[in-house]
Image (cartoon, rainbow, N blue to C red):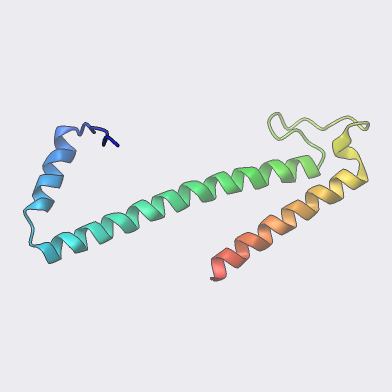
Length: 104
């Protein structure tokens, strides 16, 4: 399997070259910090998507269009009690999962 060739801008390449000149133990520390920052960035991005999904479900459960904010007509499926209960159940389950993830 061929390894794809990656192009790096000169600024990034210079930084990588500087790190490569460090003693091995220092390089390990630098890469541990970089790994932690990348992990945190990805987690923040995922959390932002999660929040938006939750906002959409909450808007639907409230009987409003999550994009326009308009109230759905009375005969909309989103104004049916069974649908509203299902949406609130889904919201509570997502919130419980998020809380569980924050604890462990």
